[in-house]
Every structure is written in C-alpha cells, then in structure tokens.
Length: 156
Image (cartoon, rainbow, N blue to C red):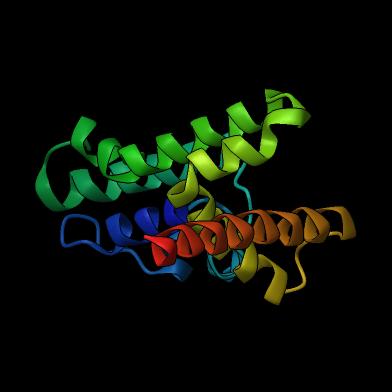
C-alpha cells in the first residue's frame, strides 16, 4: 500500500496535475486533511475513493494540458512491483500452511519488502495482535533462512 500511495502522490504533484494533498481532498469532496491522513497512515483506499482521485486528477490534467490522463498515468501508479506484491499476497493467502516457510524463503525479496511495509504499520500502531505475530514469524523465517545460507557459505 505504501508504494501505491507514494505513486499516487508522485503523479498528483507532477507538473501536469499540480495538486496538493489539501486540494485533492477538497476537490474530492472530503475534509481538507483526508488524503494527507490516508497517505501518512498508509490507509487502504476504497475503489470509490481511488476513482474520485482519478476523476480530480483527470480534470486537473485536462485543465493544464488540454488532454485527459492516459494509460501511462495508470501504469505509473500500478507498477509491476505493486502487481507482483499483490500476486504474492494472493498466493500466500491460499498457500498450504505446511509449505509457507518454503514459499516465504523462495520469495525472499517480496517478503523483505512486505516486512518493511508492515514494520512501518507496526511502528504506527496499525497492526492488530495477529498481524504483529505474522510479522514476527515472517522475520524469524527469513532470519533463519539467511542464517542457514551464511553457514553454508562459511563451510565452503
């Protein structure tokens, strides 16, 4: 979610749109601090909220460039990294518990990124007890995997 929100932020602040968080919030009919709070708290946007953001961005883009936003605009928000992360989360949700450790190890980069994101949420008090436990377990799995790799390298 962090990367998704950061991508939206980059696009709305770009020279073709030039929106502040406050302006975007007001133009979507929300309280002045709505988007800023959503951005800073890494909130999960509803589809309707995302569509309102797109509508405002499109109107501002048309006013500044005389053209509507295009597919490239969306590609810059929905990057391949975001889609890979979402796919990993989907796979994780259906993965057999007996194979979770191996799956996490096989997707080490993805889970390192997720741990970073969840670490931010944890530091902001946004994770419940069960999510904190999952974060702890993922860290332990990756740490033990990395420790094993280092031991194997040292033996060689």
